[in-house]
Length: 144
Image 1 (tube, helix red, strand yellow):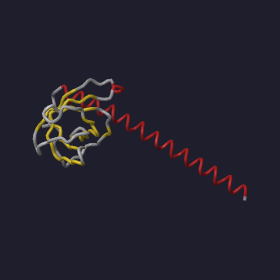
Image 2 (cartoon, rainbow, N blue to C red):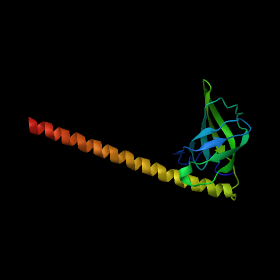
Image 3 (cartoon, rainbow, N blue to C red):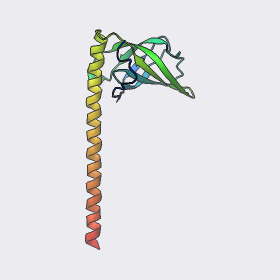
Image 4 (tube, helix red, strand yellow):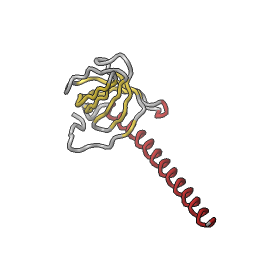
């Protein structure tokens, strides 16, 4: 099995990709987050996921990633159902020498760069906001 050691938690990255689990649903679900060892999906409908069962999943990365669709073997860990929506957590179970491992790593690298870009953007916005507050404080003290 690949990265099935729950003691060593891998970094998780938010995703906007889509997933399809033919054994469970006829609709696409959102790939909420992804790591080298697991993933979380969110569905607009209830997913009848059996605990500790294995499934094949098709992942459709964001178009901007330029990464091909790929399939993974996963094992369910938990399900949270709210109204008709559901969220499910899975462990990735793939042999380490498959092409899926390579594509998965490419997608994780892409998500990591997106995460870094978002963090940098957030930091820049915070700095601009702080500068604006400082300028406003300075103007108030000069007016006094």
